[in-house]
Length: 379
Ligand code: BGC
Image (tube, rainbow, N blue to C red):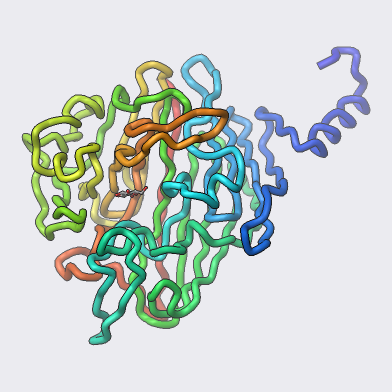
């Protein structure tokens, strides 16, 4: 900045910067801009949150999607660490749930069916015989209403969506509020809240594909992963949990001590062979109390970026981006298999059909709450 600038000059410069949509990464702030329209003509807004500590996140009202997440490395250089598209059109097309809020039920429900209070429900089957991530038009494809929030130590965005009774086959009008907060200490905190007027399954999660070296940096196999889980849920050949909890000991699923994601991803092991692309399983977290606890930690040795995942959920789906097949992404990047990983905090897949799993049924008069924090640092 011109050192001869007067106080008024600085003020004007700041106002111009704000009006032009530029965000100063050194100050905490929220900017809103138009991001296009859905096929039905609904306007979509993009909110850019800056925390004054080097992080910036772009979240749009379509799907509550995190479209960008800038995080400093060990030298203070920022990179966008989530896969995605440059424009709304990319997300309206065939997006593999990049950055999205997932609901009403994250992951799979077997054969798109469940029974509740002696009634049979039939869902939209959008993944072979199963229902995946809420159905054909899940929460990731809905436009949420948004309200910026400013609090001590964070800036945020409160998103609301009401899912109609019968939507995608699910019972009950479900009122959902998801609050994203970008905190001064470099956390992206997500609080989920929901209420229903009829009993319904619910399992909300967030589906960012991370690459801590940068969204365009290629393979994530060198990232070092720790997952605070002693067991995981083996699946059948349509990726539905068998119902058994299997110990991670002596399996490629043992991430109790940090190890590179790639070390055993190609191992000759039944659970990796079903879907030859790699990991796509729910890990049963040690913490089952509903308190916020460390569930996973991932470090990229090259950039030094570290991401810790704290959650109140009993499980986390670790998905190693197996089905990425040359997706044309942001800034000309092309995403192939294992170029991004997801850590989706959640209850277990297919819980509505598996009475031994922790319940995912929300009843009228109850409140569904869930919190997950993606916390960034560098080493
Ligand atoms: C699932 C994968 C699925 C992916 C969709 C993950 O949560 O576990 O099986 O292919 O989402 O992109």
